[in-house]
Length: 188
Length: 341
Image (cartoon, rainbow over all chains, first blue to last red; front, side, top):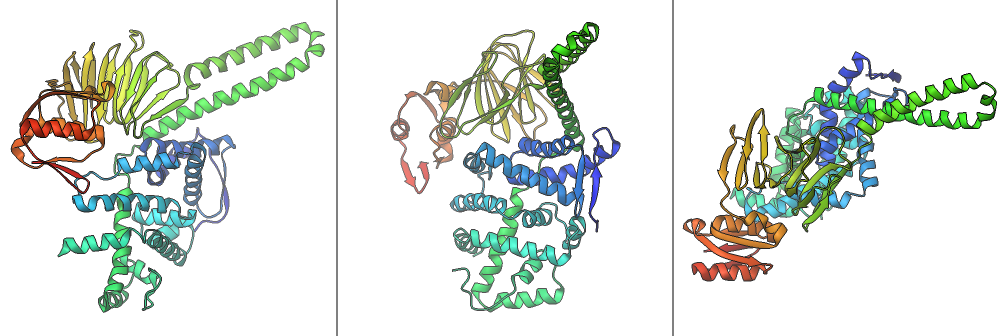
């Protein structure tokens, strides 16, 4: 685990390139799952790095650089939602983009609805909670790996995951029972 | 209600087990608990659905960190140029205030002005040539919209479509991005500055012409109305002339050129559906797009039935009535589906 430290980023350094390329795939993934747009997701990651450089490249890392960058991307995305006031637009947009339409027709409406609600609910998780969820779900890391990379304990990771899934389940309560019946019907 | 369940089960444990983080002992314990009653099983299934469903949100396309880094570096240069300009403005301000004092030293004064002109000019040149371009997002939801670009080209954007373009075209090319959906482009001719449309993996290059582009995700369709259009993907390129079209399929290696057989694609601009020996299958496809409907052809042999008619601003019901009478087929509405059989 890392201790508190100050990192200095300089765009002309070789280090900068490798820090960027090492973290980019995960950060892009993070922004993508928030915005559901490939190009915008890249823009968010770019903004994070541009802002760091604008401030002279100094990064005060409390736990790990990765945790710092995740938080920055998270905030950048939230800012985007806030400033562009695109939340509604984005959600409408999400309905169009999700699903390939080849699923079982009677269930597909419910499925899309669930998917959309799920997306919204995940975005509404608190930052740390969402980051842990992100790493577990989309980077497919084990609790121990997440703990190590974020500089927190395994118990904390476990707590965040429980909190995340419990919250999602409660928020999606209206959609889930239907789906369960639907699944059971298929299995019969 | 979700919270009112009789048996206490530790959600932490349930979730750990779901994620493969529990011990074998714990997994067994959970399995037993699930078998106790339907409510327990349901609780576990709900977590499982959330877990599995959320995976669908993952980005599965290609990620090229190196290319992204290059794009970032361009922005860093742009930012530096902008900052330079800002600093120069501040310096300029300062100099104006100091004017009186400076007058006493004309040589130094002139030298400073010369230096300032060079710097401002340099930064300004860099700025206006490369970076002072803002991107515009042109997004449609439930209605078709039109927009004019800075070069006078007119874009008609179909429903549920997204086009990105710069507020001003700079440099030697005019470039736009059709992120999703369908658009008709009427491009102002400019031989010096070719017009490029990027959509999915495909790039369309023109000088001055009109044509339709449709990005359905798994395929991209380009239909040319006037002029010559170049379509390229992964290094291969074909040229289309008026009346020709190409389908670029996501999975197929080649681009295949064909004659465009119908005028239906113009519906969202003209509000007129022209079916001229058009197979019913194709008519239904366009109607579904236009009316956000879910019409399904119930019998396979109906798919190729040729339709000859024109619909102008008619309701879907009227359109269906005509189709049903023409082919002597039935129309049945079932939930959100309309079945022709």
